[in-house]
Amino acid sequence: MSADLPLSTTGRTTLHRLSERGKTERADLYAVLDAGLICHLGVIVDGYPVVLPTGYGREGDTLYLHGSSGNQAMRAADGHEICVTVTHVDGLVCARSLFNHSINYRSAAIFGTARLISDDARKLAALRVVTEQLVPGQWDYARLPNKKELAATAVLELPLAEASVKVRTGGPHDEPEDYDLDVWAGVVPAQMMFGPAEPDPDLRAGVNLPDHIKAMARHPRGSSALRAVVRFSSWRTGLPLGDE
Image (cartoon, rainbow, N blue to C red; front, top):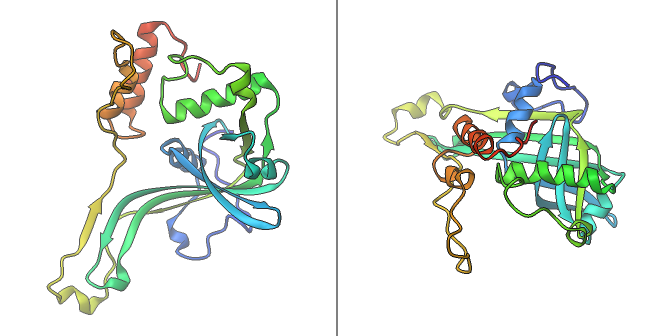
């Protein structure tokens, strides 16, 4: 599905409060998902609701969720309606009144019927997507899963056919009478950044830090600069690129 197509509007995705913050383009959904690391899976398990954090990845209009094959929530989601959310905090909004404090954020909610992937080839392909979402360039660098590891891993697939996106930007919206108060107001920006990589104490001598991991400490999460470094590293080593 083209990123230029608008998101579908359903009873579950229609925003009823602050609807002006809603984003209607599919590209907005892709941007929120592609910048994330963790999603929250909402599912009914034995009659009660459970919300679990887990790793994920997107390819086209399919979201892949990673978990253990022994995880009860993953099994309960198979063939049933679920909800998956992803949220980024972009800043803390400090207002002149406590009531008008807020948070700048980007969020997405996806609804649909999840399916567990049973075919090993499809599961491997989905795990590549999840791995590249978390550490771009790592799938072609590290050892691939063996049969035992693959059997211990569960992957859910969820279509992105029904989703909503909501974004808040900008500063505080104070009451007119509060603008005369001697209270600082503004935004404290927040950004996902990684520090320098810390080697495993048992790392064998002579094993150098690869460029794609080194780059994570120099560029903000989801930045075009980070993606460019990963692509260059893959090209230089002759490894296939994740989207080719």
